[in-house]
Image (cartoon, rainbow, N blue to C red; front, side, top):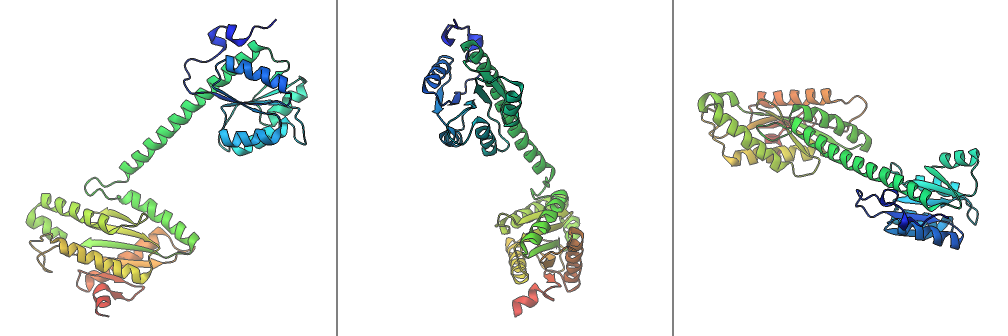
Length: 345
């Protein structure tokens, strides 16, 4: 006679190294068999046994409670058997895995093969011996614990990779996105704007006569100036997808999704005014006593010919035009005007 599970040694019952409460969904149409198996599972230390007698309640319980393991009879009343139930369970957890052990009085090779093909992981022949059930339960609990630890490790690695990417794509002086991050984000936003048929604006900014500031005040003051400009750019990029980056040296770039031409000009004028209001001293600027910036704007709804290279080139040409017209302004070829002209209209 088989001994009940509470008379078996600990190593065949509950895994003491797994502190996670373990839940089993038991799907069996015969009430007497279901009660006996549920009793043995509880004796083995299963925290909760969910019970169902046919396909529909089994699937509802699986979806609602997400058990840690399923014991599933192949022969069920109604139109659907255990194979069908296992397939539906697998469809309900894409990317996940819940151990499914089939229960059946059949033990032919074809029955085992059908069970594995349907999504099952193991097979028990009824009547199930308590010691065999205990061994299967312990094995599945070990696999479940290992998978949970692997998922946790994978999540930790994902977070670590995100932080590493943020560090790799951050300019250490200003705290803005660096050139590498700029290239990646601009490419991504072009693809997104193309899909959404939405306007995308790129601004390239250059601090006016910054070399003269470095020569007059020294590089320490120059670095402090760049940090303050970085703070200003972060303040104006208030929408979640707006990105300010340090393009290189005293050049900065702004990626502004869903920003049309007129909105881009208004944004640029506000940015120039905000920087002037900060009153960052420029001891050798021919424009005035405080630091100013010039910028080039390009705005488009990207098509198949639009690339990061073409947008940067267009913005750079506009920046050159802004400098040629006297600096301390932004110029847009699409608007055929600069921010000073726009303000007068």
